[in-house]
Length: 206
Image 1: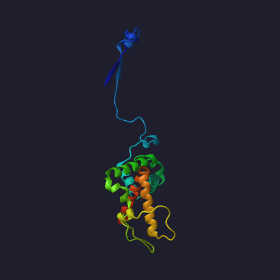
Image 2: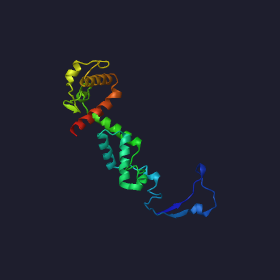
Image 3: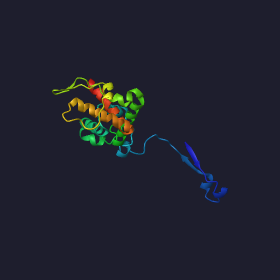
Image 4: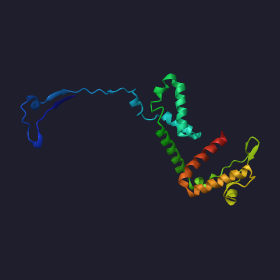
């Protein structure tokens, strides 16, 4: 590609009075375009601005599904990088496509929670639905049998459990207190409870 640079007009729309012939006839340029970067693609400044890869997003989503927080999920990803890259894991951890930042992980976690709430209908996400079907769940020699939602709604109590209360009664007291908090401040408690319920249901099938 060839370009000619001329200067025929000066300020206030009048012609230039320069006697330089080059300014009148113009400079001839031969331009060659090469689609090459003029900076290193492996520098830390470039790597930290790369888009997060689909594999990393999928890995992060799976970690969130098993109750990882953004912080613990990032620690898990960095540990896997140490195993995979060995001594070079420090350089690999700079690459945002395979090791995203804490802010990006937090945003991903919030987006997943919002999508989960958007997909819930009123019946699924109402406070009454946060009573878990955890019958015959045993730990050591203690067996916990939770009452159905209808029984809990009709026999709710407030305050601390009575002295000598059984483990089942303490469980039900916790559920009642949680339902009360969700009614009073759904913005603060509803996302966390929805995530807990989802993870609890998955834990039952593990």
